[in-house]
Image (cartoon, rainbow, N blue to C red; front, side):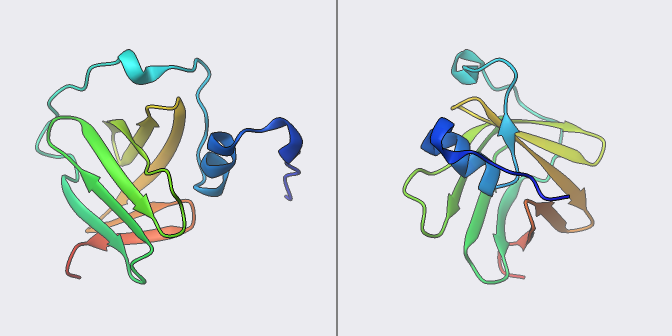
Length: 117
């Protein structure tokens, strides 16, 4: 199914979210949310795509930071883990689901492995 996106009505943040496979949160403005310390089962650490274009740093305090080659704005925010789905909630209000596998994360068409894989 091909999804049509009218770029005339989307700002740059929304376009980045779509490109990363996320979607706008139903209620914008998660910047006031305080991160909480997460369980050890969260995939904490630095994750990289094989070609090095995507980096995701998942922290024990419930926050994350990322980097995508060619993008000026770096994604950052908080995350929640429910089963094998990690949901990244960017401080801009965008949310991106991440599938957690055995030593691999999959998001928006990217496959990330632990740094050094």
